[in-house]
Image (tube, rainbow, N blue to C red; front, side):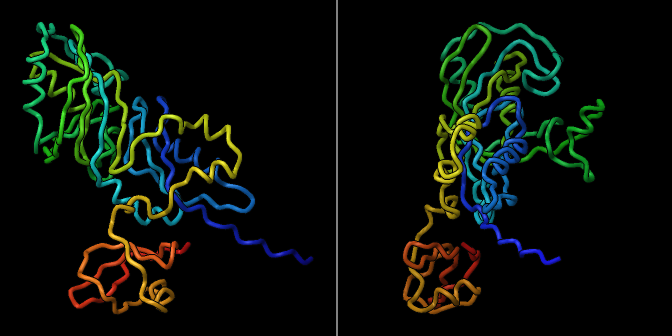
Length: 305
């Protein structure tokens, strides 16, 4: 029996900016996006998000597909911005509304100046102890697995940077903030620490990411919206594979050298030294390179588009 060879599917490559809903894990959102972008002619197996949001959290989750995954670490390492509400008066096992109540303490009388003076203490480089309910690993096991068994282990404080905290509103027992921070920041822990500095306990009841690196949230880009679109309309929402690094300097490949670049070979280029440049042939992005002091174009990440 002779079978016709299968036609190779084209790889879906690009970045999709999803507004993650509450109740889904980040990985569940990735799986849903992969499912919605696959077809008889398109392969969307290679995909990953660029910074975990807890199930209770909502907001911007950039998903890199195909060749865009070569640049995903730039978004993982980038600055993030969140809007969050800290409920004051008691702490929980998880640091958010999904945990069980642990400790209770009366909330002092709040005023705008007191809150602003308190949150100002957290701006800059600070040390933060990661929570037990986190994906950090101890001897290969995620901490949250230990936490669910009631086991708590010592965690080392890690340096993080809080670039800005803005007070948006407050009530007698809650404060809502905008927080701009470095990678590795746990907003749940920041919320607990701010509550302690105010003389009480606290936990998050709301967490919404509004920015990752140079990407802002597009509130209409929900899972439901994606489901309502045709295959072509979904593809039209994809940003280019190089979108995570689109702010890098851009150069044209030297004449006749595009194919050599795509094979990972160096070329001469008349251009000042740059640690990172995007290399194009016309409008097609070939990848990421370094330009050395000796005016050599050295491929670092080659795109197969």
